[in-house]
Amino acid sequence: MQGKFSGFLGKAQAALKDGQTRAVSGGSNLMQSFSLPGESQKAAKILKSFLADPTAPRTALNSIPKAVLQKAKGLAVFTILKAGFVFSGKAGSGLVIARLPDGSWSAPSCIATAGVGWGLQIGADMTEVVIVLNSDEAVKAFSRGGNVTVGGGISAAAGPIGTGGQVSASLANPAPMFSYSRSKGLFAGLTLDGTILVERKDANRDFYGSTISSTDILTGRVPAPEIAGEMYDIIEAAEGLDESGLPAEAYVPGQGGESLPVPSPSTGYPTAPPAASSGVHPTSAVPPTAPAAVPGSGNKTVFDATAP
Image 1 (cartoon, one colour):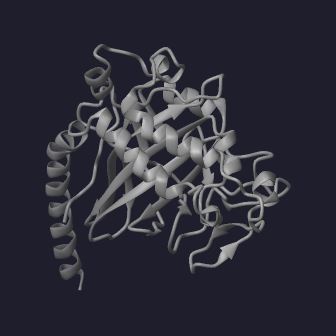
Image 2 (tube, rainbow, N blue to C red; image 1 turned 135 degrees about the vertical axis):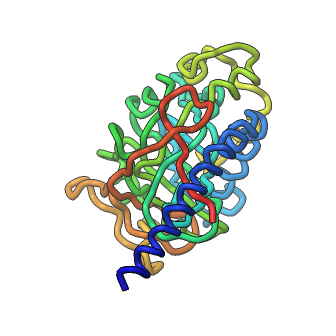
């Protein structure tokens, strides 16, 4: 029995080593392949599916709440590609925008994602993620450049879904970041803690034409580009949604698809949201795992995952 286990372990370790090599060699192409125009268009599509449609007000009952959006200091919108054999890994791309003092939105700054997680997962899955930045500190973490580790210095919690007073109550003392995710229209059950959001200086430079810091981009020193216009329009439309006549229904989805109560300010907002089932959903959180390096990111963070 011990011999069989040792044989399996040896094969698993060999596969892991091979997968890590392929992930690192291929990760550079993955991270270098996107552009800011493409990311802006992708973000618009993602936000359209996460935010309420003003022409169909009842979609607000299963969307990021209008109140959450109106109070947001910033938004990070990205996709994560999960791939795993013995280890699971996450890598992808997206952008971040910040709310300016006049209420408008900044130009977008490109980001890449990376992280390491545990689990015996076969295959790959693309997941869409929206992180609502609720505090100035959360925005500053992105504007300083380099990388941000979710669940590190700044915590993320399950964001509420729906309308009504429970949503407003949850905003009395919100977590620095609310996270939402979906995959193929279903709740993703995604673990964000330990995910690393890395500034893509090269993509920003390619679009803006010079080396511009994320601080300049996210503080309004760079004009918002026309290519991001659709994204801004979708956000503005959702912020202007007329919720009159809608029932006051807010919840956090549970693992079995049940609707769990939105935590009150007295009990505090959870940092470990329930697992998911289907629709737009807050992401789950577990203790962060050690990150490894995204090739070409200009910092010490790495994408470390194995492919089947």
